Length: 447
Ligand code: ADP
Image 1 (cartoon, rainbow, N blue to C red):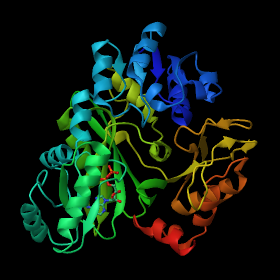
Image 2: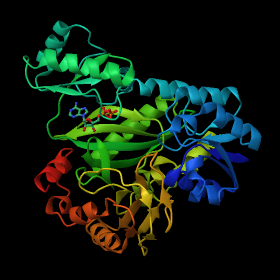
Image 3: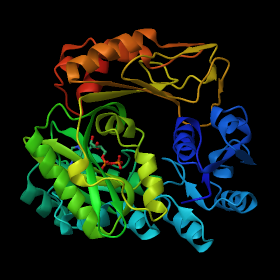
Image 4: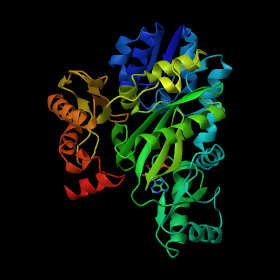
């Protein structure tokens, strides 16, 4: 087991990882920027190292400073959290070269999944169902027209280097196609420095369903069921559930089994998420995230398995703590992402939290580094906490969520809490009847 873990992140996820390490009796080091001196994870860590000024590229993305902090403190492993360097293959390679363990997959696995075309090819080879489309990048308009005609309109043009929903364009007919291709290529070139694009069938009303997996790096892997993250705004998840209200037990076992087998065959090490669009009973792979995700607590709530413990165990060579047949799904869980943002326009609202009171009671978990008097710095993303509610079934979970949202107080800054109070009373949400476009439509209609 590791002696000391350095946490290369901030906010609620740094605290989350710190808690898991403490439970395992491992000492913790956090690195932080000058803007995060007063952060909760800095106060609770055994040691802290200030690695630079507020901008992320000078601190949380500064690989040299982080490696130096490991050497100064004698940390033998790094947990990257999510975002920042968590899917940076070079970072994983550099740590390996310094004999420091990256708590995550190998640099090579991160690289494969970081390239969307390569990821899709790999998924197909491993028996994971993918969206029909081009086999690789399309450079010629004529070739694009042939492929689009073959899979049928509408189609979506996506950037190979894509991320954050950028560089995507929908073409509804052959006439639309040349313009969609040209705009997608130029957006991709501008955003990612790589204008390679590929074509997929555009699904009209899919749900976003993702499968949580953990592999031991030696040919064993398990799945921990799925999460439904269809409630999104600008491709950003807002509300997540486990299990998905749309799947039955057979579908869950089938897609989970396919993913676990694929991950075992890949020899993948650590936690990861295989993301799908789901429509008319079919799953279509869109991408794999080779890290822990923001919404992982809903999976923990219904399985009782601590995913960060699993990540640490696997990375230290201790293997998985559970077999597939020991993983049981119990009840239902929902997560609401509490952002310091205007609940309607989603404009960030940094500032000082004058009063912070979290709900409690059975089935409630709040992951947050915020406290009364905490000043939210303007430099980073606006997530200030996550409310995760568990119930024996979806109805009980929703009742408890409504009560918890009423109890939650955050004064001094705007938050997305009022949006969740609206959503929890909405009949479509109550029925679990929504697709990936539902929230945008709802926001437009109620504006
Ligand atoms: P990114 O990495 O940029 O987030 P993804 O491939 O994960 O890109 O897609 C992001 C979102 O775009 C999906 O959650 C979905 O809302 C939409 N999307 C992607 N591919 C398709 C498709 N083939 N049909 C319909 N919507 C899609």
